[in-house]
Image 1 (cartoon, one colour):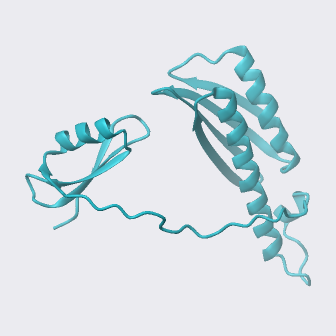
Image 2 (cartoon, one colour; image 1 turned 180 degrees about the vertical axis):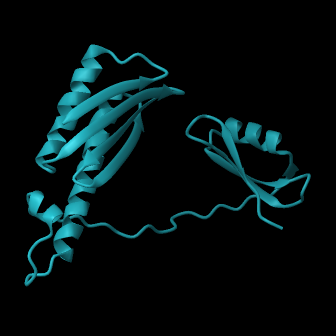
Length: 180
C-alpha cells in the first residue's frame, strides 16, 4: 500500500508522518488490496484536522476528524475508518446467499466476527425557541461568530424570509435561502 501524508497550509513533521503511516498501515489487515491511502493534515482555528482517503478493492473510504491534537485526530480517524470497514464487510457478507458462490470482492476480504454495536437511531434531544430579528446576512454572520456557533437562523431584512447562514469547512460562509 502506498501511503501519502501531506499537509494543507502546514508543514508535516517527520514524527507526524511516521505516526500517521504506522496507524494507517493497520487498516491493511481488513483489506488485502489497498492501493493508496492519502492522509491530509491541516490546522484551522486551533483545530487539528486529519482526513484519510483509502482506495482499493473497488471501493473508496473517507474519514475526517478534528480535535485539539494532531495525534488524537490520527487515532480517531483510523478508528472511524475501522468502523466503516467493518460495516462495509458485514453488508457484503449479508448479500452473499449460502447457495451462491461468494462474489470476488467478498472472497478477498477476510471475515472477522462482528462486534456487537448497539446503534440507536438519532433523536431530537433539545428544542430551542428564539425570536427571528430582521438582519442582513453580514449581521447574521457576525452574530453567529459572537455566539461561537457553526450556523445561525435569521430573518433576512431584504427578502423578509427565513435564512440560515453556516460556516463551511474551508472557513468561508454559506447562505441557505428558500426558493420563492
